[in-house]
Image (cartoon, rainbow, N blue to C red; front, side, top):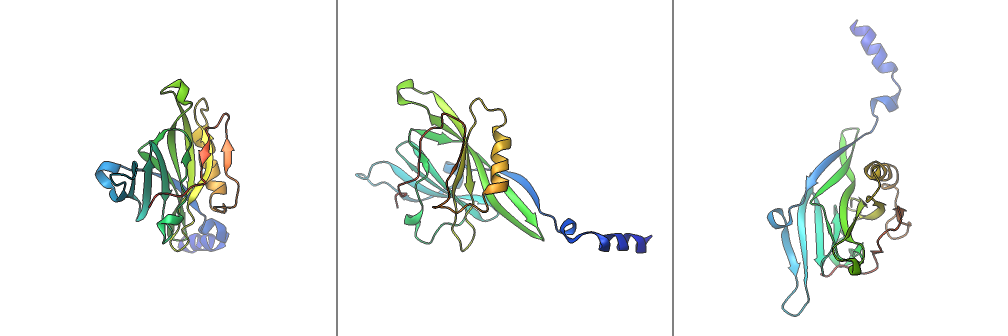
Length: 202
């Protein structure tokens, strides 16, 4: 019987023996409890704060907040933090404390390659506190590459399959996405205006 089992194992195609597995891990970012502020506005510098927070297995999360808006970078950033683009919605916004990290397990390596986080975006200042929910899919910056950025926006308000769509985009498009040159994926309409032209304040 042992010989039969061994023979069957050896006969398995290589791709079955080392097939990639993709899973989700949920990590909460508690800015007040877990994050360290490394820069903030002075008395005459407006209102902004930059924080570094724990992410997944040593991958950090950088949170930049200014004027009731938030920009988040996942993973290893460029050496010069000034090169991190400001990526947030044009109107006032906030995001859920918990993010879904998509994890690739393959050949003994475990690599987080994407995150999905729910954002709450003010739809129109004239409408008061009314918010639109959007799932933001981001690429995680890898060591030595610093290639993190927002890859896709999936409108979640009124879309029951938004989470499935966001995971599909994360798994199939994030790793080949070229930050700074590829066009961001937009799913849903009307989508709040997303601003990624400026730089974070450092």
